[in-house]
Image (tube, rainbow, N blue to C red):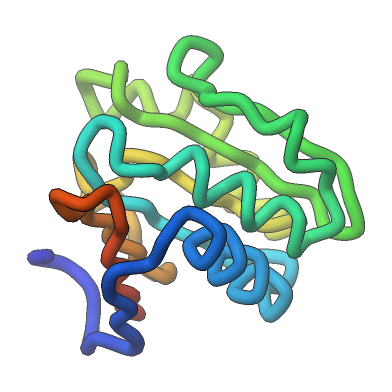
Length: 146
């Protein structure tokens, strides 16, 4: 991971339940204005991680859907969860059409961004979470602060 500070936490070989529980517990410590930047290959579990986060923020995880085509979904809960997906964005200027600028300026709720690494220079701060899938289907999670 090119951008991001020192490694804060590394978890290895998490099964699905452990992966979701980690995301839930991680989210419980988040507050308005926090930014979570997700990195991982297609199918690595970025949206699944957001479902775990949703539970931790008091949002019904069943409403969490990949925003690949809508670009950003908003889930109200104890803390509002803004869920963006930059996979289809081709130019950094398009980031403003997604509504990211407003969310960042308002600083309300938690913003989680899938494919954030496609525009690494855009993010001044945030918590980077890299997800890797192992051959046995378990996941490794590497967390860094920026």
